[in-house]
Image 1 (cartoon, rainbow, N blue to C red):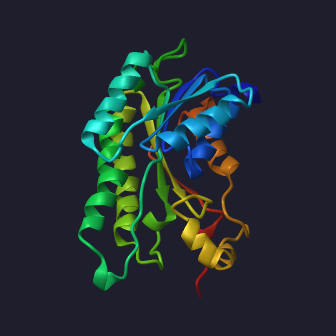
Image 2: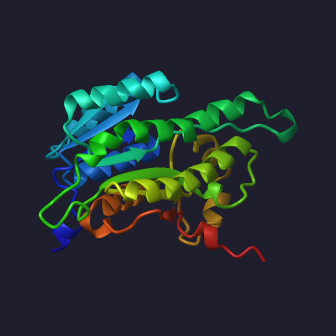
Length: 268
């Protein structure tokens, strides 16, 4: 029963930014879980191909397929959607993981940081979800009814979209708060169409985005996490697999902290 309840066997998955950091852990989780095809998309062709080659050498039942796409542009997102439409009759899961950050002192924080961060972290997440909705809708349906195993959209948010971060990453924290609200709004509208939408509010994980912060203050960060460690690949991969399995089929519109408890640390 547990194998059926937590299975993603045979599912077709798209993970943006799936070749590095948190995205790598997500991709690995789906391949471990038996997904038939996991598409990883970003503009870093070298990293995509390297990761896909490494995954495909592991002997997993499914395949990792790299697709180069500039997810910060409308044209790049549209081309990715068109390519997926050529390759697949349906998609079971979309994980919107790609994102970027910008840190600068308040008095020097540039206007360009808002365009860059909000466009990729929020606007293009909406665009890609919108463009892939027809493929997601085609995945639903079973003998138990059309909503028994809905399609899934998973947003990779952040604890910085819930709490006030100490770092001066103004556009990033605002973008993640917006992404969490977008998750709830889409859960309402897409739930009616047989698609669940949930978000993970991730805490500290090893990634390119977190590299400099962890290099400078890892011990201090770990002290602020009740479980006394930063996130590992299986933490995020396992959570995504759970949300994409039968066990997670009735969760919709949730913002799930994946942070070792950092959001519940008492400050006084």
